[in-house]
Length: 135
Image (cartoon, rainbow, N blue to C red; front, side, top):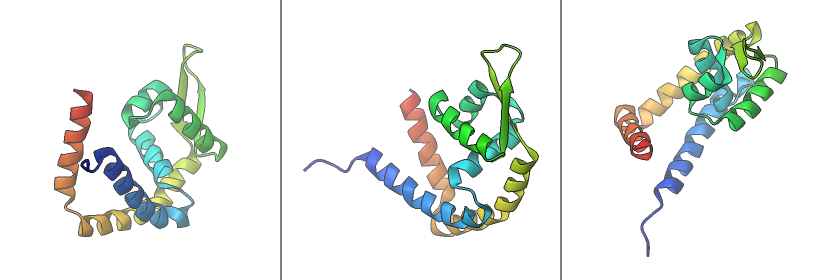
């Protein structure tokens, strides 16, 4: 019998964590990926879709689809940059308000996860996984 698949275990653990965070964020009307993208955009400020993808680790196609959904909900806006081929994305006031509503809910989920898992060790392991893949 072969050894357990690392990828399968990582995906299963990620789904379990998403379930916890999604349940916590539901009263704010956001999913975990939406909240993560909004928070990242709040940190980066208005930027090109390419730069936003680099900041979030998303490929352009996935990010385009997700940003489109956030834009339809009025949480982000996009427009052409200096170069018409470049798309700029930024938070709206509604996006900032969504972050404000969801942040305390996320904090509770984060605290619950930290009670269950040694996050320092987890983050170190996840950093090693990312580094190994990039090498």
